[in-house]
Length: 479
Image (cartoon, rainbow, N blue to C red):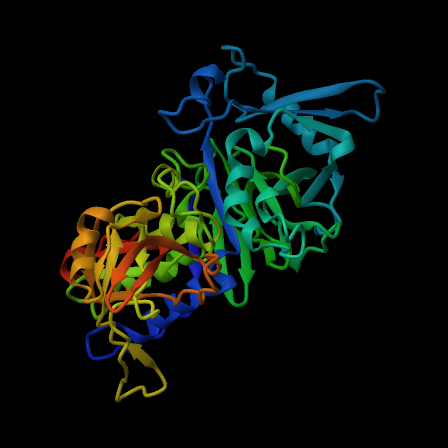
């Protein structure tokens, strides 16, 4: 597995034991902000087995055959050379001793890159000079980008048909960074069109040292360390406004394919049995680990919740089978990160209070005496969490006291009550009865008093994370 490290500033001020103010504030800011989801990445193991046995099975991780490259020789018209990566991988069951010679030919065929030091340590091939048997769509990478990055990109493109948007990955260039000295200074790419929202970098399986890939957005950096795994295809995708750089390659040759990512009409996942993406590469991961390492955060354990930022048609029975696979954007990042950390994570509907507040009891805000600038949620509340996603229910009805309604819920809308949920965000307000803002009608009933009235209550899709006690979670988050 590829390594990922992240740089983030976490202060060390704590409250009275209920939570760590700085770490919790950092988490809340992350999940509610763009910075939590500006890049993603993963790796695909190489296999020499037949692709029909290795890449199309639902019962094992996706794998890829050796990556083949063909490039033109300008000196000999109509002549092309061929190589595959890893260099020592057998092709058609046979090893070849020509690989090293062909690899040297590839290096010589590259044009000096404009960002190379005097053209000596970095080279490139434009797409009109080479071809490859690898395409990111074949191995779930484009699907992952569609699920993770596209939802928050270019909101003005097809804004009335968001569900019909898709990702086009256009091969742009092959780059070679050679050690010692090969590197690319920090920069921000200029989009090559109005619909480009990001870039994808594929690192081919070839040994090298150094050459970390650093992606930075608003002071938060994610480092992709690809030099320790020369037997897998490794990748990173990021938004166009992110600064990125290639640190110095100290030994060997770092070979990458770069793709431009465009928002297009969908012509055709992160959370799956064997995902292509690695949750360790989500920028949110480091913040989550810092929070869980803090013994003053939810010392006695409990439940942490997040109101899904994207809207899902969750009052349907089919939703139970679609979740968590249908999550997207920040929602899929939060679910994947805490699942990667070994916690119990679920996607469940939460009932709205009859009085139109978001929970059964209103928040009681308190101020920490040492750091009065922080408002801490005492999170004294009880909420009805659905045991599953239900279609809209029509209950028998009864008096307006609420007692009969609670009894009807036991069988009509099976749920359990969860106390003291610590919410990372607030839901968007509900607009009328349309379900806008993430709220949808959960059930309706007739209530009888002086006159009969039709009542209904709403639910919202949420991500619920079970937090172990400080003693149970100590020292297990050093991924």
